[in-house]
Image (cartoon, rainbow, N blue to C red; front, side, top):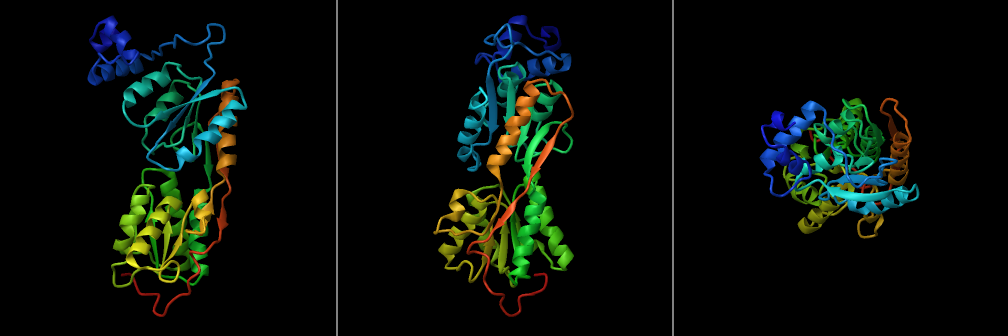
Length: 332
């Protein structure tokens, strides 16, 4: 491997341990050489008899406010099965994290924030490291995943707004490089197309699953000649950001603008928000993800499984405004 990477054996050893004396560029060369040669270093701390650590790594995007709320549930589910949980944040040194996970540092990996072109899940699957995706899935990856029925959730949101009398709709969609963002958008658009209702570009904004997306994007949606009377938000955090922006602008919810979120976080039910949303069964999703991972650790070697969990519409107080005259408004 040292010859392949063009460095000394000592440098290889330090690079694979993520030693701070090794530059990121050199470490990447070593990792690429290891990948090319199919080399997986053994973690020293593991049991020599079982080759198991009892540790599960959780890879999460801590900028997404959803996952800090759920780490405790994942921890408890793993603990009930005799595993400890170590959280790895998707920031800092991705090469070092990949090296650690490929080395056998943990028995298995749970990934909660996979993007469609993410390399880590594919590397883990290729090296036969037990891995399960939660909330998001990758179509070109044969790995286990536990997800919500995001397509059905997008469809349910659109139908709810149409049934409430809205035909001039807008959307604050999520990131296009995630399965959740894509499927929720597709479901929403499919129902509008079936109903013959347009969704012009002027009434659509894309952004992260973040409070700032809702807060900063709502004013732009309301500037047009025919602004939407109702907006689908790709998650509750976006919707709460939009509600805060509406409050600052003196726009009433739902009297002036109706909103629907997605996820049904605890905050959605707070009287301050009373947000109509789509409930994702996170607890069931996490349980099924842990179960699939434990089955892999117990010897299951079958093809990747995707467990799709049903969603439920939760009607509260942000979607019920009556349609106003001239609501069809054309494709502004």
